[in-house]
Length: 538
Image 1 (cartoon, rainbow, N blue to C red):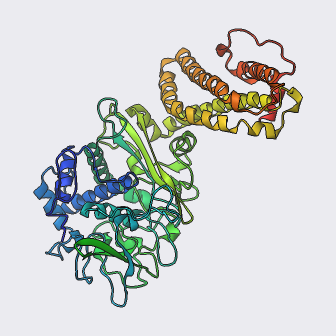
Image 2: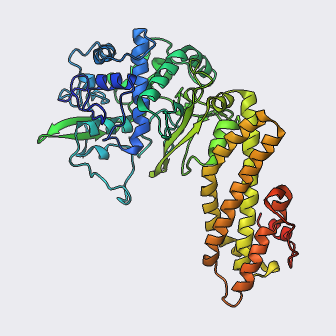
Image 3: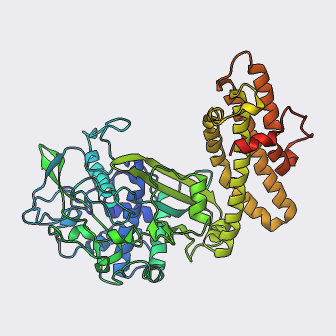
């Protein structure tokens, strides 16, 4: 039966098939380009699992740096399971259900598993009940590594899916999701994705370096973890029906399992059987996801971890998480003590947006930022400066959006200045949404530029502000012209309506008052003052 410690079942495009210890060694050498069989939504869970597993193994062994040899890793992992000389906890299939298998707790007496699943995607965390965009149970030719990825994704990231199907402790409620917000070393060149090995090594070292301090941070917020000797790999433990583990029994980096599932061989193929439980495996409902997850933002006053819900990592949400001070940055989203002031980073934000018994999409965003910005986000004064700049940019975006919507509403009203209503503004919604998406790509590069410009003096600060305004104005004008033909208007009135709409946009008094450098000449007198229509756009 596949043994992750000795059999090369994990595909690496850079080095070929690898065992789990071989994979950890390759990551430590930064010799992994990608995981070809890994599905996009599984990527955050896989990274977090590998980092947690490696950090636990190194901490228990008293080591501070990930080794680069496969045999060293094999010994470190086996040291975590000394009661199982036959490596049962690292095998995908173990016939004796009284013993654990990889991410599969032992089945207690009196518990029967049914509900067969013939493909790994059937035990994954994606909810595909309507069989639409992502089809159900399609991985008919799956290999052993597909089951590995599905087990990691489901057991460490799933939420509540009906009676007896409880979710993980590292999320705020059963309909939430486990977020990842962290810094990764930026790869050389123009790539927008981190090097997997460099990211892995950085997170492992940062966890090990901050263990004592992170435990102190957690104590006021949640039940204290076991400083030493706590349960770390929860699939090793018996799971009697109704039995729950308390946080005080656990290592702070524990790798959890939330479901009863066992793999077996049938007709030469791996199949799964699932069961339910009377209670969640970890007794942490009262913690609202605040259980020391080093990748999870925590709301400071409401004491809960981030729930992405139906949102994505929009500039508004990221500004709130990073700069507002309302949220505590997770440990791995802050520069580590060993990282120099010249280290360039990527900020990685990822989560599966979930709702009540539904999946609302996998969201991921990667933002390049230099060390100065990264250190400022983790510093109270620096964060205040970034928060002020982000707030200004959001207000500036609103002014241009308001002008755009007002001009398109004039077209829908047939050019009647005094006849613009909410119904007419509704015809500008699509253009407004496109404007927001376009601005989303501009927001952070200009924010970093404005932050840097503050060090260069007032002239540089104004130039950076003007550059952002010009970028917004360019997008607003382009989207206005693109949206104009689709706005309904009587053919007889369209020439007048479009002419007045252009005069409305170019003559917007609010834009001219705040961004006078964008306009070469004062506006021509129009039939009605554009300022009167700005108020209607509220």
